[in-house]
Length: 167
Length: 179
Image (cartoon, rainbow over all chains, first blue to last red; front, side, top):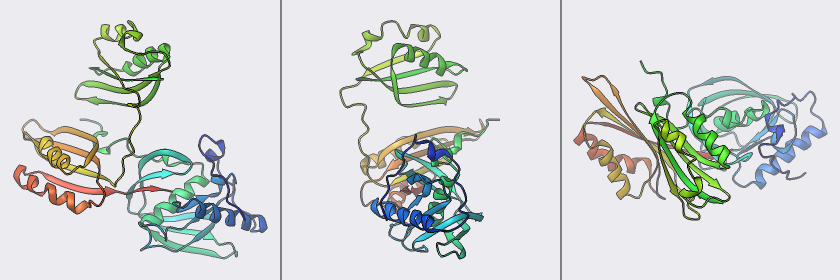
């Protein structure tokens, strides 16, 4: 289909909650294809969420298999419709950046392992367990469906160590 | 646009940021990068700011006088053109935690090793915690590693300090990812 322009903050669509997909029709298949094309076109990208290309539907694509951090542990290309995280455990800090928020990165703590449920484009329901970088990428992309940017998750400016209440 | 580095330090109390930024706003300054924090009982502000016309300290006139009257120390540095632009720091970011019973030289000894190995410290915090009888020193460093340097290398470089100063040191890479 087509490589779409990545929406960049302050585009208001990035702060809106996306609608669940009720029926997988041709237009939904088209959005999935566009997300994959856009992800591949942005050579470094490991995931794109529909709101990032201006579509307020709960669809994301993730593929960490080509990245240094994810190549050992991944499920290949994931095309996820109505994804939902049903379990999470552990925690992992990564310094996240986002194509929709250029030139800024922040430390974000996320679950290290997740169980995520989603529908694939042929209509089947899938449940997978993801961990490490793939888990972080999935959580980051699903956040886009809820109007959340990594900026909403930054856990500390520097270190948490100093921020506790003194006695 | 000319750029300046402004530092302000004074006894911590509510209202310092608002007093400072009101003056800057009324002067027509644009705030770029800034970092402000409580250190001990003091509040310290470091600001990089731009102004379309101002060229030097004199341009600000007596704008900072109310701050000095409020017992805040004010220092202004005029930046050379381009001095406001952060150079592109390559390399993996790593966090280094160093902690142990307080003793002289912890910061210096660690920083010396890192400097010699061309590790670029991008952020450094230290804090004296614990009790008066048993003070504990904690330092957390964020640093950019030169190409090809791994977590274990940094750990090995710092190992002698661990033994000599009896401090605990841990090093971990924080992977930077664009998603």
